[in-house]
Length: 79
Image: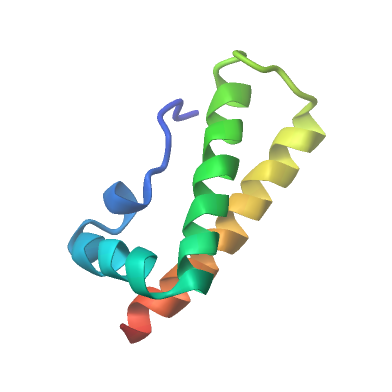
């Protein structure tokens, strides 16, 4: 299990400029990015037992993170 956060700029290194620009110009994208960041941090805290949660809750957080990442990629791939 990887215990490092999945930051958007690391997951999409060739899209970091687009991520930054869209955060400034697209309120929907900015909300998705903020939500992704919050969920991502919650997953990281759960994985490292800083804030332990049940396995089911952790799996749900990972699914939420994946769904957000898919939505973010959908926007980035059209940018």
